[in-house]
Image (tube, rainbow, N blue to C red; front, side, top):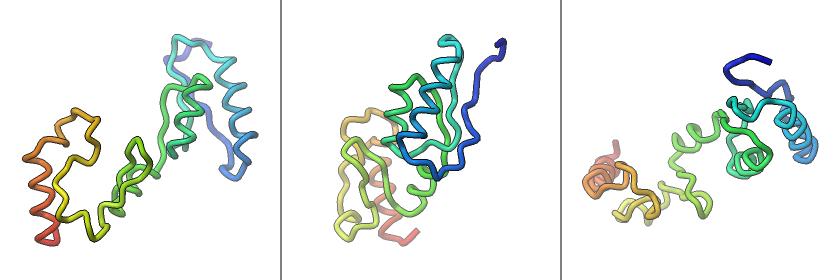
Length: 119
């Protein structure tokens, strides 16, 4: 196998979790560890954690972007519903453990102004 990376896919999405994880485990075990191993259609937090433990490196799914579009953020504790009535007045960072630019006070204040304006 001489590819630059490998994709694991072709599952229908309706399998039970154990069957899905068995397939991922079989595939990652057969693929080189020094090349990226990408599992298609994985985006739910639990699946990302389990597939990572099974040796997968990358994922994609509509779940994160769809979740964000509907006003929900995925944080270490679970999901944070940003459209909750208490949230518009809350200027705290979405994830206080994250040091990324999106957590900066000026970004948080801009988001608050946009929410108040209904944008």
